Amino acid sequence: MNSFGRLFRINIFGESHGPSVGIIIDGCPAGLALNEDDFVTDIERRKGGMQKGTTPRKEDDKPIFLSGIFNGKTTGAPLTIVFENKNTRSSDYEKGREVPRPGHADFVANKKFGGFEDFRGGGHFSGRLTVCLVAAGVVAKKILQGINITSTITEIGGEKNIEAGLQKAIDAKDSVGGIVECKVTGLPIGLGEPFFDSVESVLAHAVFSIPAIKGIEFGAGFAAAKMFGSVHNDAIVDATGKTATNYAGGIVGGISNGNELVFRVVVKPTSSTPLEQESWNWQTQQVEKFSIKGRHDLCIALRVPPVLEAVTAMVLADFFLLEQKTKRLL
Ligand SMILES: Cc1cc2nc3c(=O)[nH]c(=O)nc-3n(C[C@H](O)[C@H](O)[C@H](O)COP(=O)(O)O)c2cc1C
Ligand SMILES: C=C(O[C@@H]1CC(C(=O)O)=C[C@@H](OP(=O)(O)O)[C@H]1O)C(=O)O
Image (cartoon, rainbow, N blue to C red; front, top):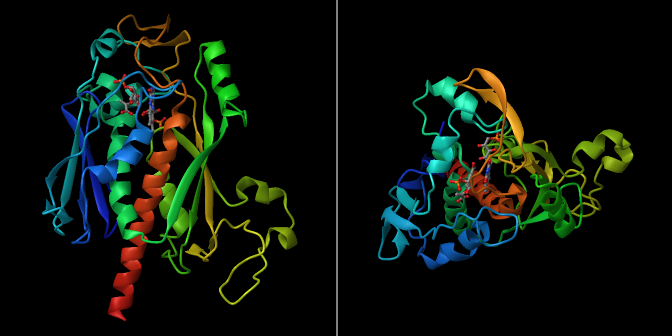
């Protein structure tokens, strides 16, 4: 589905080569001061064409507000923001239509939607739609006063040195993946709604909606499997619940424990690699060699940090609103 969240509920729409992509945020509290300048920093951080290893497709990514803002403040009605697509080059995709790209959604989208899907630029499956998530994050962060969310790339192409990892891809004329870490400070104890809406569950749900994300781990994550319980347990050192270590990553029992929330995600190597590949050709009904000519990110992970922060903000804002609502009912 294209909607997510319970009280802070988003709906995203659009295709990479359609007129625009956009977002409707329902349940956004009234009275938040919001203008175009608020979006600049995060939108610029996500932009393609700005740094080595990212798509040369440059869009101005100017937010256009269609509803939900009046006199510079949110009204409480659905907030609709769109971003125009002005720099499309659909001919790249029309030429390659007969060969579904391995690793991209071309084949499955065709089977699921019977050939009616907009395949240009990956259509609705494109990373282009993550500009909408970033916009939601900007609004969500306004609800999260005193909470700080930061994401950093910790690994590219298996290298801790990001430049070296990227150079590996450039030298091999291939794409690479990476790991991005997200940390949140200032969270209170008590966010999360177990059983099924634990903080891990909802964050993972939202994070896996970001195209190209293939894994997530919280705190010590997979390394916990090799640890003793006495080591993995985070000793509580004061009445606020502060812990000496943070192997849990700030979540216990699906509920935030007041320590730093820490998780990492795996970003796969871009499927649209410049290297020659093989795939099934729908026309010739044979496996054929082909190479992709479009404008692609050599390393998607380079563009993920602001998207990850945004999705985290969106999820946490929803938990906050839910928590307040629960409290009001008591
Ligand atoms: C910010 C961002 C940019 C992306 N850029 C590209 C790209 O240039 N080329 C590409 O093939 N995939 C790109 N992707 C990933 C594809 O959209 C994704 O692999 C595809 O939709 C299939 O989904 P999956 O990888 O989650 O299975 C990007 C993803 C994100 C989040
Ligand atoms: C446009 C963006 O990224 C696009 C994400 C994408 C994909 O397959 O996900 C493929 C490329 O699209 P195109 O071939 O149309 O240039 C990227 O440029 C963006 O992030 O704003």
